[in-house]
Picture 1 (cartoon, rainbow, N blue to C red):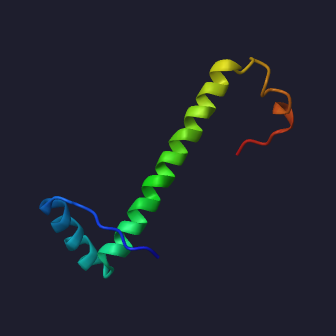
Picture 2 (cartoon, rainbow, N blue to C red; picture 1 turned 120 degrees about the vertical axis):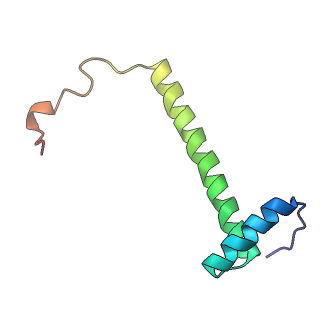
Length: 75
């Protein structure tokens, strides 16, 4: 692992410290997990944007999903 220095406002540090005490973890572990979650959220938003763009370029046809409809079992 690599050590990095960050500048955070006092209120945010206080909030983080309260949460990590409750969770029984460290600032570093909490920050790593928060950064992983933020990166995953960005990745999901990018995939959703690509998905929307694809459907905008090639909209769904009326009969596109009706092919196997009679064979499906709906519960």
